[in-house]
Amino acid sequence: MPWHPLRRRRIRRYLPAAARDTVTKSVHNGAMQARTYLRVSLFAALIVIALKLLAWKVTGSVGFLSDAMESIVNVAAAAFALFIVRIAEAPPDADHPYGHTKAEYFSSGLEGLLIGVAAVLILIEAGQRLTHPEPIGAVPLGAAISALATIINLGVALWMLRGAKRLRSIVIEADARHIMTDVWTSVGVIIGVLLVPVTGWLWLDPVIGIVVALHILREAFSLVKRSVDGLMDKSMSDADLADLQAILDRFRSSDMRFDHVRTRVAGTRRFVSMHLHMPGQWTLQRAANCRYAVEKALIDAHPGMSVTIEILTASQESLQEENGNGHVGQTAADCPN
Ligand SMILES: [Zn+2]
Image (cartoon, rainbow, N blue to C red; front, side, top):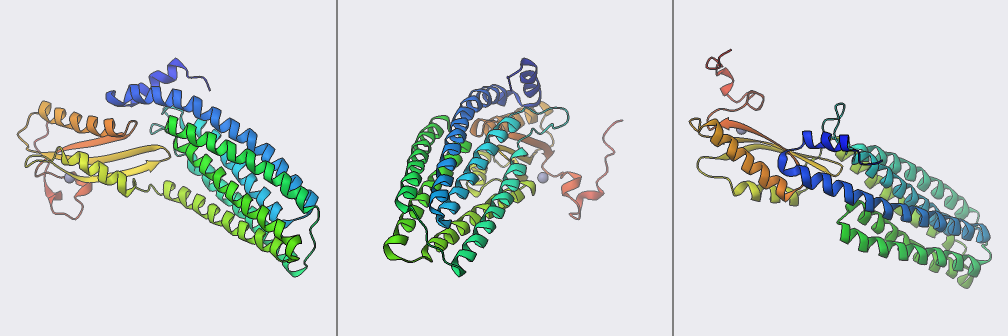
């Protein structure tokens, strides 16, 4: 998707002044390079899957089958990540004034369900093999093919980890770490399958398949959980919350207090809203200056964060926060029509 000048104006209109330039620049350049990394990882993963499926075909090993399945999971992850970066970077528009970052949760939820199904299929296959053991053949050839696939994976993962550090991209880092776990799984599977002809333990192969399948199931569970957390408007992490409070502490005084601080995370975007209470006799200009200073400090610390600050007097609360808290009886008589 080209970065159209019209869309650039759109994002500028919706963002507070301080965040505009940071966001437009970093979203633009970062996303372009992130996509290059993700595309390469996708291409490498296709080769890796082909090799691992070949290793399964020549040996008939359930262990190699489960390893190939895990790589398919990684391809799905990389493809979804590519898709997410595209959708999520689209600036807010009239239909989606808060942006499109929640797109991530559709894909991680769907991916979680799909890999969960894959894991169950491996478990069934391995279970059948446990009850009806079958010898596996051509183990050295299969192990060599699988080792080649693993070396490719390792190279890609290390290259992406370096890129993730340079671009400070969580998406690339997550993808690289995912591939890295795939490498460790493969090493375990190769060693296990090599042991089968040496020891004559036919049960070892399906057991390896079951261990890998359980690992994939855990992955599926955490993906689905992430989606649910996101769709349920989970707050920022404890570390980020502590950081937020530390920034607010710089502004707290006998005159100014914050309350009803609420945060939520939508994909890569963070939203925070709060009350800022101050003496009623302060001028609107002074109040606006204070509000601006707090907003700027928050956005400087978290570029792209969406900040909503409601200004209130020291004694007045907003009606929606005050349900059942006594102040609701206050009249609005002072406000001219
Ligand atoms: Zn309040």
